[in-house]
Image 1 (cartoon, rainbow, N blue to C red):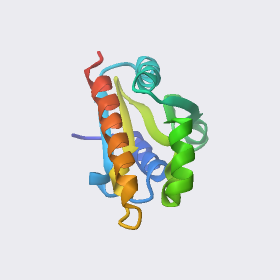
Image 2 (tube, rainbow, N blue to C red):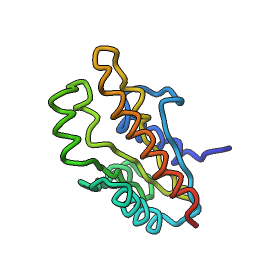
Image 3 (cartoon, rainbow, N blue to C red):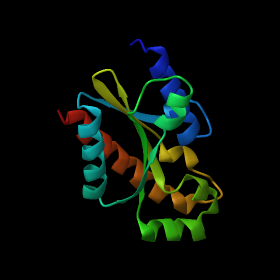
Image 4 (cartoon, rainbow, N blue to C red):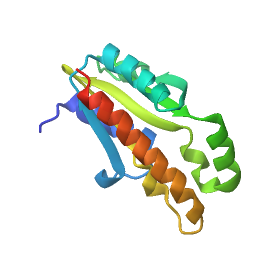
Length: 152
């Protein structure tokens, strides 16, 4: 699969924003044939349907346009639950920088791509109890992405 320079740049930015490492197996990605506005709406609705709250949507395209890239279709969607975020903050401090969870969404020609970190990469033997939450989040993110992939 070939990517144009803008797509490579956007994926690079996504990786920096979503994770501190660039190992591909630690990423979760999905592609949908939906237009960006449809996919963006569907992503937020699906996040809510899976039981999370969308806490904010951050525009990233402003910095890109200042750098000469022509795009207005790039966002990061932050989500979680108040209860889980409070619990994680107290019991598993190594996860604080990663919550709420994030999914980067951006347009690539007629498709829309979603990229996020695999929560299981944050597993830490010092905090074995956190793995049940990490696995739950991984499964929920897979479900969200699966729904988006199937949506046309």
